[in-house]
Length: 202
Image (cartoon, rainbow, N blue to C red):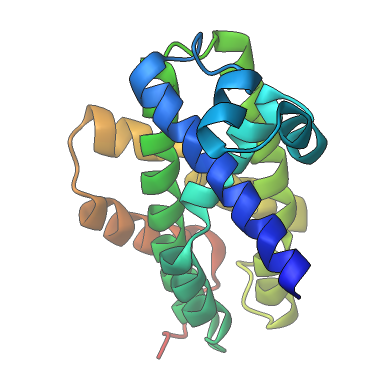
């Protein structure tokens, strides 16, 4: 237990050192050696834990995204037994994720993280998100509330698209919607797109 806590603390220090270096020195100054020096660990430790700079950026993205606020809204969503209620809560989860990820990607772009690196990060996160969202569509299907005529694959694709970063970016960043406007619209759109009509949520 003590060793696990020490390992988690080391991991957090490395990720935080990375964030600080991105802000102060940019991507070019975010070398493994500089990260190790700021985190007060050896460069070998950084390589052993994260394998590469990309691995550290992924950890920075995940640490910023999947914090206590995220865990709270996910618990609320998973605790809902009514399909409409769970979909509406899923819109809150999407808002939490999108807001956090948008801030980190903005930091990375501002720090000069190279385009291929950013593209790879985003593709990895999208593949992972598509896999994680399968549980929601399984729940809708098993509850018998999936909209008639909508295939399982189409439902997964629609849910993935609507909760994605591009929609958030277009509405919130470009069209200046508030995060709450985005969440309210997303909740309504998910319900109308995926659920059979004739029954309301609690």
